[in-house]
Length: 615
Image 1 (spheres, rainbow, N blue to C red):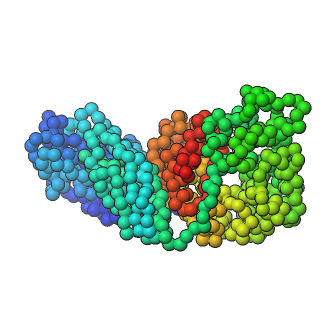
Image 2 (cartoon, helix red, strand yellow):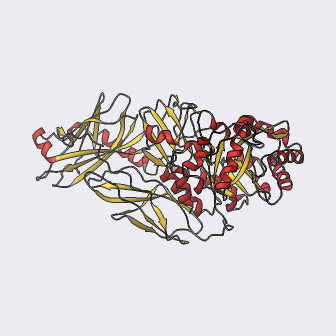
Image 3 (cartoon, one colour):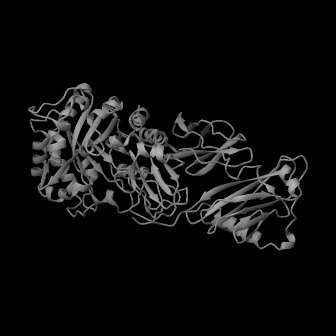
């Protein structure tokens, strides 16, 4: 995957130029220090990192007169670790000596009345944080270190009263030890309003248009905290989508999960997930020799289950005609008759056989039909799912079967499976120009299919061992994203633009995180030394593990990230899943799917978030 330089916000050049002027002011313009005794009682200084673009950052100090007499000057001192330095500044004269930095007021902003505050900013390089802060010779905030008391993130805004031109946003309050003064409301990353309450109505919008909103809290000394989760909103009007019909809530169940992961069909019940889903994709059957074939005979239909392992509490016998996962799925459907099950073929490892199979689409479809409708388990399955990664493009191997091959395959499948069976596929989410969505005739295939599982995850990961760190499942683009077109919103938009109805598109959710190690930067865009350790594979870990071992520390582009020690992970949480489901509904999508059940908590937190978010 290629990378590109981060996009920096408007105003960066202006501020950098102003800072260069401040840095070269003569020493004669600098004012003296107040005495330590005066400083401790009369001023505080608080630091915040206003922005970070990977190769640099913007820092900001706020000096406040907490005394009862007017200050005539101020000086802030701090230390940075080696490798972190100030490169330019504004509204202060900043000088450095080794790792020690000193900022003094300029002529016009040295006088501070009681209760008044002043801020100055600077650009820097490196990833270190300031230590040993002093203001006018005394501690910056008693025994507290600067930057520790920024406000928390507000709750993810909830959209309501959506019209062609407006939306009402409501969020839960942030917390702060000194109190929250107000909130900055941001639309697509730009502040559009500052309000004191917990609601804001944005007007003057365009019909049928996608917007993303976040909220940032500001405390009584104007220190800002992390942004809330993103709320994605599509205004009404501007064209119509086909009716959604029955919303799909589908999850993948892997046959190999019964081994090391010790995850069985019964776990879908005990987690509470069975009552919250509509479909299951059973993964995977193989594609080899031009045919659909069994993936794991023992797990699929031979493994014997004891009573305590079985969905209905009845043990398998040695002579019964069907055991294994297939029999457990049969029992699940009996207990939850609303659930439909598809047998999924291919996947990352077994997609190499599709190129040969589609040379004779009719024969391939016949082989798949014969296997799915085998009399031993025909009642278990309600259709077929084809996970070809990727037609006429490269995955684990490269396919050159041509742009029409996917459409031809799905046409043959529908002809063979008929109108009463489900025919679906997992498809790429690469919306880059000339990318994988453009490589195959997905639009031509849509008429034969019930829906597409758009794999809106795995956009970024530690296969790029040195980084930059980036969320593997971004809902939207963001400044500094390593690859244009690698996000859910652009993928869905591109499929729609090709003429695929919105209600035939499902949004994908990963029940796992992807991560790096050797990372010092908390925000996305940092460098790394390689993949973080995972339970089963480097660079990947289940949500149920990450929830406790590396809790989320921030959100970007609608998904969460976490920095713990030197590890950096990105993953979806119940809060970000809820936000994504709201977006999916606003887009008129057919629902959502996830990979895969065993990554969820024992009480099915993420499945619950999908269900609640789509209801």
